[in-house]
Length: 161
Image (cartoon, rainbow, N blue to C red; front, side):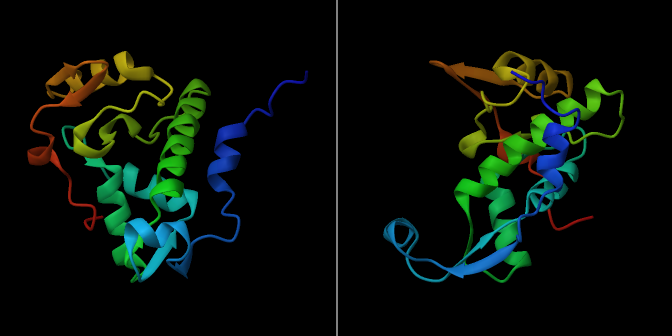
């Protein structure tokens, strides 16, 4: 088994695969989301919104999806690709940090809906919890899930910047 290329995640982040694109909502997606259009973002676009979050502030995948929809005049931002590309951005940030690069995407400030921490981020729940608490947030555990208390008051303006 061969080793991964040195910039595996960063390369994934840079590969737009012809995205972004706006399509009609169709098929199974229309059952949940109704009619209209969906923007399928480019990975770098998701990363760009994640990078805008200053220390002490937060965002959610849903906030990013809404900002993407506004940017592209679409009804919604794709929930699946936006989540996947946030995960890619997080791994690319860790990869860049491991190479000694500064100014990496502060992905720990991007939460799932309802202020939930993302267990799929490279630092895991405990790592994300520590980073958020270091910035002054209170993390509470409910069962196996962790949430930022009062996250709504800390949401950043994604249209700025």
